[in-house]
Length: 157
Image (cartoon, rainbow, N blue to C red; front, side):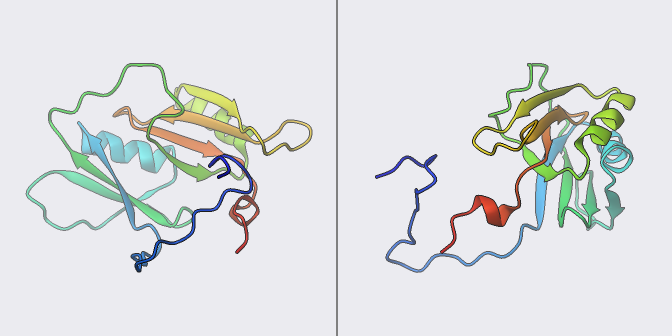
């Protein structure tokens, strides 16, 4: 069987029916300070605050139409943001960048530290596809990147 990293690798559906989930709805992230987190997502990443049910705990719901997904910040008074260096292979969520140089400049303007990587196996002259990783104020890792279109990254059926 080819490696999962091989361009010929395919995992076929199992013998029983699978779930048929639709688009992503939201990503839930812990926050020690929901207001501070919401400010970051709105001011730095262009999300907007949207109505949230009257849960018994604090939090914020944010939406960015271009990303097609909501971020749910959920207050956790015991949450301790990581102070470790960013591990780009650790859990994170990623969004496409239309202009990664402009995004890097904006992140720097906001004092956000970044880690840059070059995406292997998808060579593009002259620089290749870049990935930029950074943290929100609660230590959650976010990636922005310039990648090939998803359809070009997926093996056609």
